[in-house]
Image 1 (cartoon, rainbow, N blue to C red):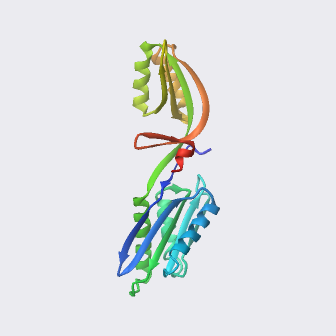
Image 2 (image 1 turned 90 degrees about the vertical axis):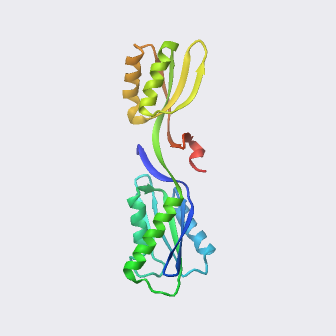
Image 3 (image 1 turned 90 degrees about the horizontal axis):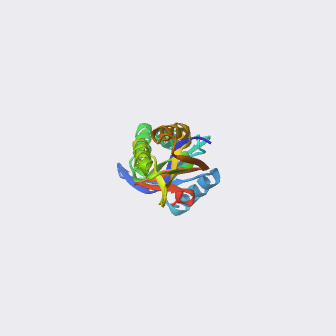
Amino acid sequence: MIERYKTIYSGSEAETLEKKSRFIANVRLAESEEEALAFIEEMKKKYWDASHNCFAYTVGERQEIVRAGDDGEPGGTAGRPMLDVLLGEGLCNTALVVTRYFGGTLLGTGGLVRAYSAAAREGIKASTTIEKQYGTLLEIQTDYNGIGKIQYILGKHKIPITDSQYTDVAAITILAPISQIQSLKAEITEATNGRAVMSEKENRYFAILKGRILTGDALRP
């Protein structure tokens, strides 16, 4: 499992104009090549009367699959620049289609590259991106003398608390990047003089969006 990667949470649409040509960018999460291809076909049907429906996509947590298509534009002037934008943003599992309605003025090779690149950037800008992190659920129990110290450590490292219960002891569950678990446990043990009892539970991907912890199905809106 890759520890962290950037992807689309919710795609969006953005439109730009260049010498009377309309460029409409649509972005969507695509966690398989089948999803990416289905999205491209969907956009081609939606914009069936357009001059071109160019595409680019990356699939895989390490961008193992990358594809681009110019849909009739001069080779290398549309799909590849769009793909370069996706790769430059570090986006995984992302599909992008830029639709062009020709406005009557030729843009030239350089103009097309700039126009498709700009449309791609605007589409991504309009979308919501997240960083998925591979983390571990860690349950921590301690007395009330130690909870303040633990909360300070968690705040310092920006570790989210997913659950908390306060009875005769304080019990909290946190979700931390897997690479930080051992050092975090050592720091908590030292701060509480060994009074904290910690138990590692399951590993899972998570993301934090506007202060909200996303896991499981919530990672896809």
